[in-house]
Image (cartoon, rainbow over all chains, first blue to last red; front, top):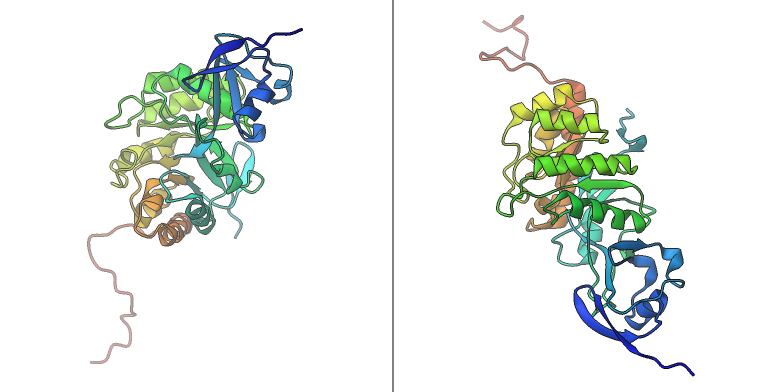
Length: 72
Length: 257
């Protein structure tokens, strides 16, 4: 039997509590973010889009999720 | 007459590059850009609002298949942040073109030139097509060209100031020596400012505030398109030299007496 342990992660500067073993795909889903329009950094490393499924979040991770906005 | 703007091996019809900031909403952004005729549009890289992620996305309004997306590094105050921003932008899959700006001070928004040079070196090495925003300094322009930047983008005046070209003589010196396109970036206030830059022989003009913050952004977008086109044509046509005294336009023969 597997126990889900809550992890503390920092997402875009905000502290969040998420389930242990969460993949990046699942994290984006839980945040209702379309993966096609964003770029994700995990602990300062860019995560390639095709490895969101294979990337699991660890306790203490710092995640940055960015996209394009209006700018000059 | 065919007159293409060539940038890093790509051909564009429009010499006006526009920003996407400061518009009322995405619909206005889209319309202004359409009317401007621009084919290259700048965007910024920012955090997604994770508490309200379902907001519309800029790229839902600007099809990257139709427009060349030029991500900027606005808001970066050192080379590391600028390089990081460019890498994130590249991962978004819109190409390798980046507008490099490393800001030195938030009152003037003038570039930090040494940091810009440092970032440009790294980015060029990593295969980015780098368009750096710089002060109107011919030495910096030359250095960035030597590093391998695809263009140089001297400011006309401070970002958002609308002052027009404050030092046309420096722009002229940059133009005289540059082997890469010179794009005037920042400080344009109205259509005549854009025309002046083009008449001088600049390859293009980049602007945002002058259109987005005009009373009627859509009409100003059209004015800017025409200003850039008029200036370009005047440059190609070759203006007459300035003279102190008059030269009659009508024949002197056959005057009644």
